Amino acid sequence: MPGMDHMSTGEGLSDTEDGYRLSSKDTTLPSGRRTAYRFTVTGPDGKPVTDFAVDQTKRMHFYAIRSDLTGFQHIHPTMAADGTWSAGLASLTPGSWRMFASFTPAAGPGKGKDLVLSRTLTVPGGATRTPLPAPAGSTRADGYTVTVKGEPMAGMAHPLTVSVSKDGKPVTDLQPYLGTYAHLTGFHEGDAAFAHLHPTTEVTGDHGGPDLNFHAELPTSGNWRLFLQFRTGGTLHTAALTLHVG
Image (cartoon, rainbow, N blue to C red; front, side, top):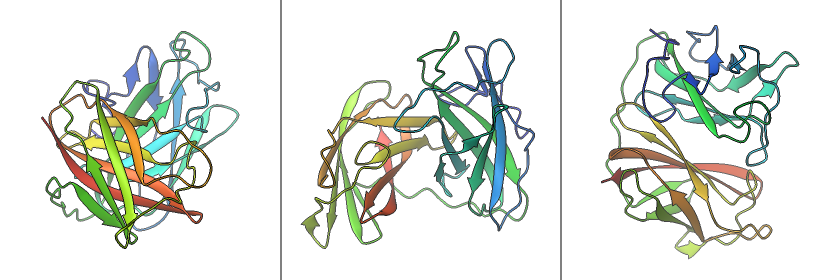
């Protein structure tokens, strides 16, 4: 049932880990308009957690992805004094969605541990499944060409290099976004398992690119849908690409 994921297995596919639990009363959300997803993270003592460490300039990273790996949203929600978070979502299309909360407790038994918890929900209406695009080495977004080089193997650390160009020329004016030049996340085809690919390129002002390096450790073989977010001229761009992992 939507929202009842405590028996799930996989990377970020459970609503509990090490005594921490992601809770929400939202099991359905409307389609076709902006809406909010409200949730709470409770600790091993059963109380709402309100003390979170800053990771890539934010205390909470929230992701929404549909079961066919479309509709990607990466949001930085706001927290009320009682520990209730509110993530403002753009319009959702009908279907099954998974909501991920990525955070690091700043106190308690989980202090310093990176945690990713998730729950599912349903957006009512006639759902049309979109086939996953075939694996490819490059993609285009907003006039930019993004190329990914690397052949990661499941469960093994492997470097990935992402290059950004426009009109056939290397892009060298990438601006910092979340403390780095690009943010890269992946979701596994079939179960939507989550992976955050950590950037290793040093940030030196508003002139990043064209090559960006990432530390990739994808836990499962198969196809992964990667979402690269980068900023130029104050505008955030999102490029999506399918990567096959052996």
